[in-house]
Length: 295
Image (cartoon, rainbow, N blue to C red):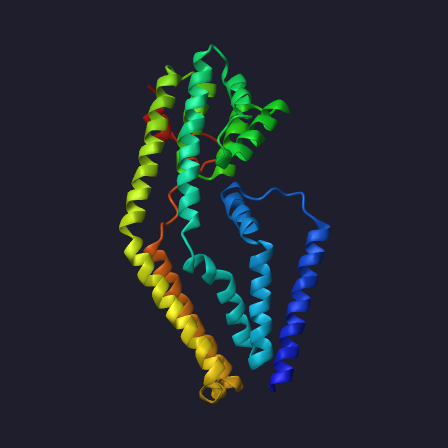
């Protein structure tokens, strides 16, 4: 396979994939996504920003023009998509802490509104315009569902799925108990949950500080590897010439896969894993949570 043929095949595959995506988007779908994947889809939409997509396409196009390697083009696009968040500040951790703090503040708002002899639905509607910014969109969606006449338990479960945070799950579980089982002293329970959420945010901050050295080491390793690869492409093209053959492309795919796995492992070691959700049963409140929250 010559370089021109490889590039033509890559461009043809990309065009076909683009047409499939355009057709799927125009056709649309009426099926709602699984609640367990809503936050994954929302995160993917948030990450697909114009600068990130443009940078990915530019890196892939530059690699295709310089080397005419289909595997190299794919690896360059993947690196341009995944490496900037890894090498930059841990924005996901900052957003997670801000979301937990916002959940705690909104919980206190609900508690104070309920103390004024308001019902649960009225309290949610009253706090929607003044809810903290990190969860204002989700609280507004919850208020909209209540306005439309949706039953409160179903609306609360949808709110938990949209927020996709264990701290929100605890608050929603308490509200579900109040809506379905008439839990006693809801104000005191909400106060306890708000304090627990703030302690959880403080714990994440302490863990992040202890992992700062590991994150710095991982960034240095990944950055040096990327710079070394770019330097070899610029000044040592003859050394990389064997990768231009079909067998070399296979070897390049294996080498790139090994480096990608190593970078992913470093990122996982230095970062936070996804916390276990509590409200994973869309049909009702888990028994364990009910036992813990019923006063």
